[in-house]
Length: 327
Image (cartoon, rainbow, N blue to C red; front, side):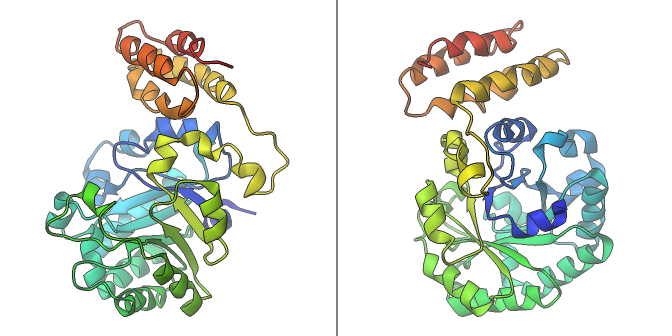
């Protein structure tokens, strides 16, 4: 199976999250699960076209399968960035049609694009013409007053006609005015049934569900009705949630790593980056929640928080913190 197919049929993913799913978090997650599809943070097309591409796009080979999420509304710019993504080695490129932040709205992309499915279809078609990797969509069930099932089905129908096969659906609507991005992740009610119905109406498409999913029982329950499940904040707040998924979701004959093993696998990576001038905090901040719910987690977090900022901080800080947690 090649990576393209793997991304298209992958039943579990970690959501793209601004300020969270950077390359160091993704490498950390790969010590827990080898097969879950990972995403970059959303990167706007202007940044890729005019910014520091290595800083924005570089990743470790171990992070694959990996999808680059793009933000933008100009089909030509999106197509150029999709080509760059494929050349850079990404397995998939994903268009953000779900983010409701003011910055995104001022650029007329993200969730705003749900009101213009024809433009999204044009962008997807243009992107697909330039690459062989999958072009996928992440969107909401609706925005503002355009939030009934028929509105969403129309959006998916229009965009799928140009060949888009994978739709990740955040099962909450987005209010573009009046709610912050954080409030838009929690206040609009979850409507899982609408996503299930979408899969019934479009059985030929890969429909992935997102929103409020915090444990593997919920993952298994959803997979009875849809093709894939995307986990967001729970992946960051409790990354060890994914320890058994290679065995239980992907049917791999593997022994789940212990929490201590996950952290110990990070030592060479940490020293590699620290030796090149990176501050330990850039990596250690992603490790704090690994012992969530385990005795000693407060001491673990405290030791890292107090020492990761020191100029000499390296993997030894993390090794010392490990001694605070019962093995």
